Length: 434
Image (cartoon, rainbow, N blue to C red; front, side, top):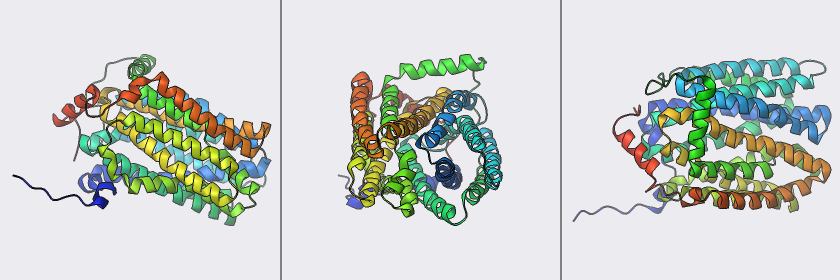
């Protein structure tokens, strides 16, 4: 009889570092992504700070989301089509170069005696367009450089990377804004794009695995959307995430929350708190491969996110707000992990770029709509009513999404036909694992 040693409890929950050890290409993605996201989170804090400083208006801050929405939708779908037809590495690097140029424009605008509000909105629109063109390629690279059975570990590592950047970025941004103003914050972001581009340059080319059908761009996009609609399990996760972010995304209110509690020192912490919770999930994510009903995990986490955000509306102190945001961040990362795992394990390579474009829209449009909803509600009612009502609406909308998409609730990673097909393809050598 073969005997195996029992696995220590801490080994069952701590993060699995295997992809970092085994895949040099994944290490490059990890490092480059960390650097670029760190800088982007500094700008993420600086943009609403500068608009709030220039206008003092809830609505003016919310309009940043309006400015980003249309280009993100248009270029996200087109970027997904490009990712299925062109070298993904090249598209990612070009995106870093374009983002550097946009950050430089923000620096120059901020150095003017009277910075132009219109320039901030235009650059926000262009940043969204670049992100839409670049992000599907970046997301679609991962299953090409990591074995199928290590995708859960790689996804958890990417979550940890994102949360580390999101904790450090706002904290650095808050300090830089207080000490030197927006121009210095944007300059730091510009330099991170230079560094990340130099790292990602070392990636191998990632062209399509097989020759793609010579379809016109619009037809190519539509065929990808038809595939997405045929996957009701995946569509259910999109609906849950869209509901959660649209109704319970509080980031645009953070400058006003800090003001309401007379705690300007807490602005950076408000942006970082959720990512502290997300990092806690990443560091203890070793248990996730044992979960097979990924859709249920997505739904449960979204409900907990909404409840935590809603409770911030009745929080008695800034510390309660920070704690609730950390709890919300944990469940946000849990939801994102299983949503991305369903995507990575079950979608074939020939539509992966277009599906990445749709996936990007699902997790990007929600926060943008959330900015509009939360700031409008705050303007019409009050800051605290906006937070509390958002949590209630989130719980209700997620429940409706679960009822509308039963395939998501039934999803089982051990028996799903799409997962089994992709596992066989990986075993046949159709992925580019180091």
